[in-house]
Each structure stands twice: as C-alpha cells, then as structure tokens.
Image (cartoon, rainbow, N blue to C red; front, side):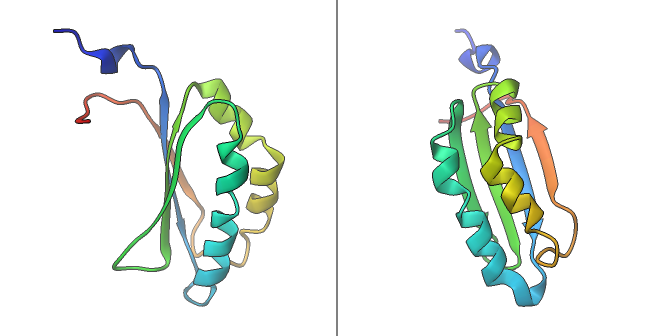
Length: 107
C-alpha cells in the first residue's frame, strides 16, 4: 500500500492572531473579511478561521495551499496586505504564522 500523503506537496499553514481584550469583535470582522477574497485565489484549497472556545481573543486560520508559490501570492495579495496594515492596535502580540507539510493524516 502506498502513502498518497507523501506525494501530496501541498503547504499547510496555521496562522494565529490574539486580539486585545477590547478589540475582539473588530479583529474578528477584519479576519472574516479575508475569507471571500481568498476563496477566489488560485491555489487556495482550504482557508478556515477558528475562534478558541475557551479564549475568545484567540483566532487561528487553518489553511491549505496547492504550492508555496500559491501561498506566496496570497501573502502578497492586496486584500491580505490591506488587512495586515489594519492589525496594529487590534492584536496583543505579533501574528504567529507557521508553514507545515503533512506527515500522516486520517480522512
């Protein structure tokens, strides 16, 4: 049995944003605004925004991209750059953005 996961070279991203306690709704609105334009981007496979159930200031994007080039195009996109410019004053710490490759999965 071969492992199809190993031949899948998609890029997975986990991007965490922590809102200032009095800026939760503003950050949520800003981050939700990224969903629709990102869905239209070439190479976007998955782009989910999660909010921590026990800490409402904690938001995380879970993303999957066809390639590093597709991710790089997303990172340079006008809608993402405009949102990044609006983060100051909304977040408690700098965003934590990490790229991953799948080693194993259940689906």
